[in-house]
Image (cartoon, rainbow, N blue to C red; front, side):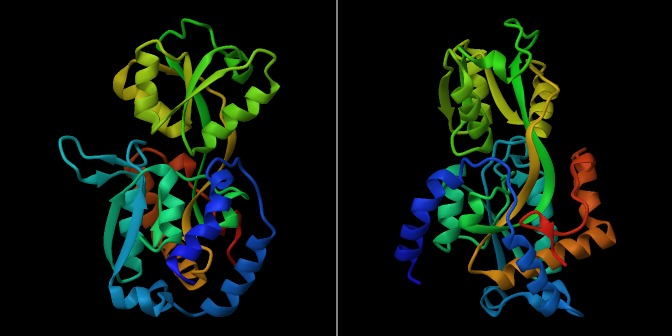
Length: 295
């Protein structure tokens, strides 16, 4: 399939897929049965497809701006965080070099479909809508939390309290979908502003242009802790798995990444990465593909 055709096909899917909420898919079970039949006795390195093996590098894409998941080391353009750290560990298990690229979040799946990178690791919710375009190897569990200015001057308690207010949400994110779903229930509609990412959205709160935002919980907690400028409300909405996205046509690579996750869980490498960033509580239990057990 040509690059142009693959992008055209996914284009119709990605508009809704990028903003989807949490969901399950029966296709995940089939993926697990297939994996069990073809990976027995093999290592992650054994399962790497020949084209990726020849290239010698695992090309990963992320969207910087979600500490502790993906961020720049202070004063540098070097990407660090849970996603780069785990991505590097997966590449090592696959016997490949590691390369990571920063890109706009809403361009990650189209870029994957177009062959610009091999996998996407960017705090991306594993949703049924997105599975129309990609498969996921799940590696994290979290939901969206409401962030407001320190002291919560407008007394926001929950999603219902956002009705009639200006809210800023990252374009293409599952948190945008949470806000839009709530807005359908509001008698007095929200004014929803869309930002490129979480840090840009927080600037709108700083300036008073927006009352609140919704950010993935571990990210929200770190922003609040590091800046001292925000409160994070305790409830998590649409909590569910985040996944490593892989082109749906690349089942061999998907299985290799799943096997690498299994090996990292077994030898402590997975826990070590999460420990480094204080998010061990968000670990997944076992290896999941599209929210279903891989084997």
